[in-house]
Image (cartoon, rainbow, N blue to C red; front, side, top):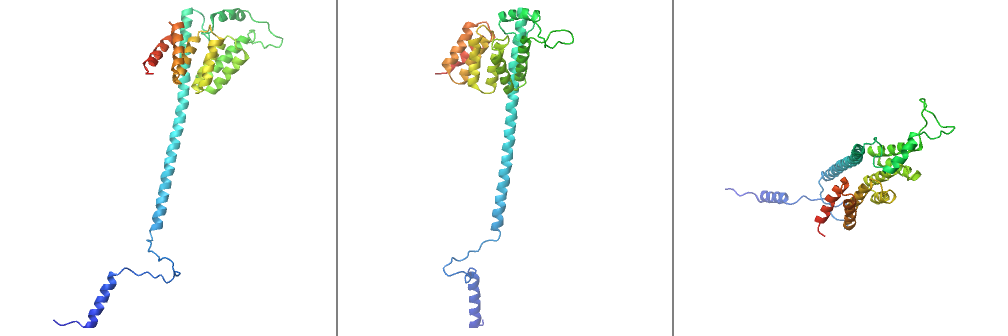
Length: 276
């Protein structure tokens, strides 16, 4: 075998060495002492921008989903308030019908108004009051509405607003009726339903005060056991166990045959089962 020339061997070794070395970067254009430039892949800025835009789109999608859930919850709260108001109204109607059957009296809007007050109002309604000079007269010759009729209409409007879920409007109308004439035929019912409206509206202090006024101003009203039950329920919700038991016991003791007494007994049993 012939030996390769020395020049050819030298050239092959130089080429092999050059292939094994890393690529050389020209730093001659940089100032003295500046750090050498590192090779940056051309696709790096593009990837960072794309990732940032992707995260922004995801955040916007999550915000839209949260907004949708908030709207659903708001609508659900409104519907729950309407259903709760309708439930209370239905309970009052059923109670009114039951009392009407038991007493054999004519149906009245406020069946739970005190019996003496209802009897006192009958003569007023039977004989038309003196008509003022400017009083309007219906085409049939009937006299204009009496003050009692006006109070009845105001109460019906407030109660209808509450039944339809217009809680704020009902509170305003009940307060207006009570402030003008706190002793009218429908005042005791208006005071009770004012407390219910406050309770539906989550105004606990105002509800407690309204129910307490039923006991103070209308002690002979048949709304008293209901008001006591509501006060006991409020104190249960507020974790005032001692006060809750006091109200519930009053319902059972003072009105043992009433429907509120049955409910109060169940609530009292629940409280007694809770460990101190």
